[in-house]
Length: 243
Ligand code: SAM
Image (tube, rainbow, N blue to C red; front, side):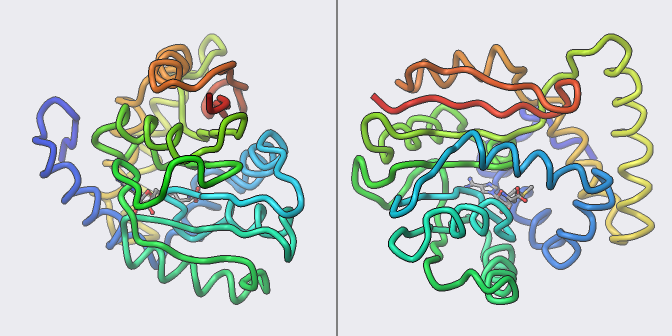
């Protein structure tokens, strides 16, 4: 199955992404640990450090899924702050809500079913807006980045954590083998869902590289944009400031 952007009409891509996340929702956390050998936790910790949220701040986590980033934000903003965990997919959001209760961080978190391309919030509503491993799944990325800039208060941070292009010689070849052989095999064997994990590999390959995403963020109106490569550029965290 090839879900490549060029070959799939817009509405069709959103429908297929929806089907993928309906299908993976129950196995999502286990598969994340397995596929990344637990390293996604370190990527998320780094992202939380870079976002540098303070007590009392208002944070929006887009495409938040099962809520790893939102939980970290909730601990950091404390009882006087607020975190909004949002996702387009009801099954992922429901799992996220359950996970928050398990983690004991539910007190300062709200939930919202929303498409990152068109957010139901007023301008300048948040101190920090994040999207972790979500932008790649969004059909209209420039629209999502523009929405992030719009709902972040001037001087607030917009954070994008996403798979990117390996920046270490030779790593790209190894990574391709991993993505197109090991990932679908893990999907088939553990999650009994090979197609969704093929989609994952395909969507990573199609995602803009570090420099392209930085310039897309600048085009969206974010300022002082920059990024950090993690694990040799397999993942990058981008940060920009709302104007
Ligand atoms: N942020 C979580 C994490 O880092 O573990 C979940 C990431 S998961 C790979 C991607 C999420 O993006 C899914 O929960 C999916 O429903 C969501 N998503 C896909 N398209 C979206 C859109 N247009 N707007 C909001 N969320 C979207």
